[in-house]
Image (tube, rainbow, N blue to C red; front, side):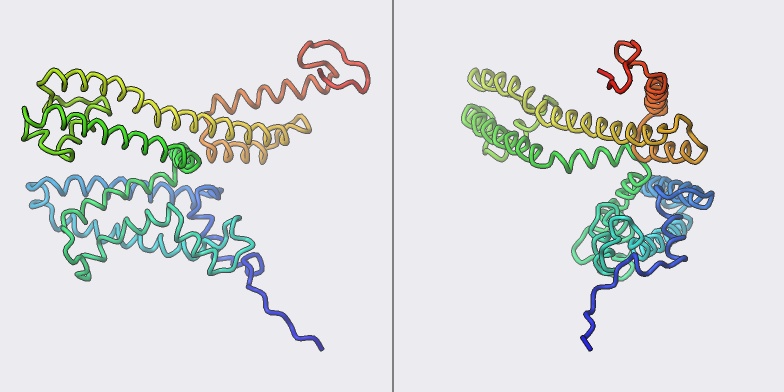
Length: 338
């Protein structure tokens, strides 16, 4: 008798009804019930409220008057976010991308994802302060870190997710652009140090000191608190200002092009699903609901989705009538639209 080979336990082999229910309730892409919608609304409201509480806490008079209420709300917020964090890790094995992974691999992969890291950062300052693990960290800084909870809202915004995808897909190009910007900034600071160090030693006495002027100039902000006074410095500053226009436009154009490409991909995905749904010429209630969920997930506007569906209906109608959709002439039997 041959010995059995032990293989890693796959997620798909271990369906858990409770875990699947929790996953559907927490995952916005699986929001098919009122429970999922209620959970999303509650978490969004809690995120917004916690961020507002952190902002109001910075007002000394407000903090002194409502210190107890703020503390109670913070404890409640962290408790909810902690439970959410643990539950998301627990049910992350239900994701489609985790079907061929072991339980440990699926959960570890989720814990290293962007949203999981943001969820951890949202509660970490509280526990560091609670257990006195702050060390030499400024407590005010740790409290301010709680403002990053606003990034939790990206989970509920397809448009924001598209922005992060754009950053990820164009990471190398952006890195090259920022490297070029840093190089030009160093050259600008070095040049201004050479021209202005004797006339303004307090502002341009060193290259690091001159980098503030270089940063403000290359980003076209130009605060005006530090300006060249020598002829050489003014001429050099004018050249750097012109160069700065192109430097700022470089990463901006990369992001704009990448975001536009993501929109095209999302539109193409929706067009494909719409064509499948319109294959029989009729949209059922389930197909309409699925297309609406897909539209929300992809971050497409209702007008754009409506146009795609209308074009799909017209295309299907013309195909059924054996009319070329381009020249609108009757086609011969077996002839393809040209």
